[in-house]
Structures are given as C-alpha cells and as structure tokens.
Image (cartoon, rainbow, N blue to C red; front, side, top):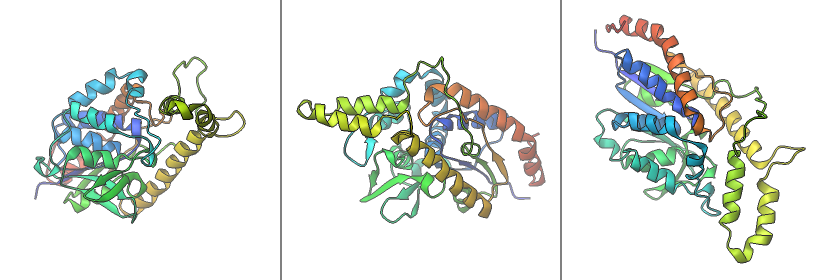
Length: 311
C-alpha cells in the first residue's frame, strides 16, 4: 500500500495555541511525522516554528515567558486598523528563528489568512514566513492588518479556524486536527480573588493613553478610558470583543468541520485561558500533551490500516 500522507491542521486560538507544542511533542515521541502542515493564526506560528526547526526555541520562550514579557510586546497604536501594531511580534518571530521563505521549507506548509476586502480565504504557500504568519494572526480589532503584495489580510479564523480542507488540498489523506475553541462558548470562568495580574485589556488601555501626545492627552485619555475600560454593570469593550470572537470561531469551526471532518480531532480544554494569557503556556503545552496521548491509539489504528505501524 502507498505510504499515508499525514496532514496536521493547527487551529487558531491565541495563547491557547501553545497546546500545539504539546501535540507535536507527543507525535514526535511516537515517531509520527506530519508530511503536510496547515495553520491558522497561532497554529500558523507554531507550524512555521516546527518546520523551520525552531519549535524548541518557541517552547523555551513559552515556558519562561511572564506577563511582563507579554506586556512588552503590546506596541499600542491608535491608527492602522488595530490597537496593537504588531511590529514587536514580528521581531519576536525573527528572534526565535521563524524566518525564511515558505517555498524553501522541507514540507508543504500553508498559512491561512482572510482577504480584508473580499472576504476570500487565502492560503499563503510562498513568500516570507514571518509576514504570512503575522497576517494569519491579525485578530480584527486587536492586531493591525498586514499588506502582502498590495492586498490587506486579517486573521484566518474568520474563514477557516481549523484548516482541515487546506491539509486535504495539499495532498494529505490522513488528517489530524487540533481545535482550540471546542469548549469555550457557553462556559464562564470566575476570576480568582488572589490573581494580582493586570488584565490584558487594562494593560492595552494604559499603553494607549501613554501613546497619546501630551497636548491631547487630558481630553483624549478621558474618552479612551470611557470607551475601553470595563464597567461594573455591563460588559466592557474587550469583554464583548473577545467573547464575540470566541462565538464566531466556534460557529465557523463547527460549520467547516461538519463538511470536512478530520480523521482525528484533538481538542485541548483550556477554558480558563484568555486571548493573551501566554504566561500560562506551560498549562497549555501540558494539556496538548495529554490530549495527544489520548488520541494516539486512534492515530496508530488509522496508520496501521494504511500500511504504517507506529505502535
């Protein structure tokens, strides 16, 4: 029998995406090597790190990162279509070695983004890795869009949060998918009374205010505070934005996967992690490992049926 072509579809989910590292660790320990990788948003970031040989560097960064380190990446901009310019994120990718050209990678890779003007799903399979990944991660309202060859792109999660269809189009006939948004909608986590960390949205507000020129700061700061800070009696701007994104990705994911389901679905349970909670990456990586170990028997069964035995 022909050797199976294993595709790995890494879904979007911001900080929860560090679970992808745990999944890849378990597959590697089991001797299962993906032949094709498609990534959306943070899945594109981790997939590119894996294929450029720098997954261990990302793991080291993720396991050591603090909230203070995350805050330093929030280069707030009050223009450009997003609250965060993203230049420091691009620099982080370069520092971690996630560079080069997609066409030069040893295996087929696609970074999924959304054309801002047409709404068309775009699979970036050539060009600079950093720019393609950054485009795929451009969460609307948070990160500024990215211009590639004259077109503007935003987060791939708007059209294909778990790119199973992309893996299949790249030739995969056994597809393992990682869905980071499977248990977010409909659950509510109560904040911990002992948690002293400044919430991500408050850090963004403070940086937005500090970015305002001195002569405009008094009046503009009042408007920014009123618009962005949470209110005690109703949801704030970021509460509505983040939860709306969760609902949107959940619904789109369900619809896309109903039409094109993977052979194996891995769904880490990370309800407690917020969009920027990268300081909880150790938790996410371990949850990815646990879920991947649970899925291994089914993966091995499929590979055995296809003529490969990794048991």
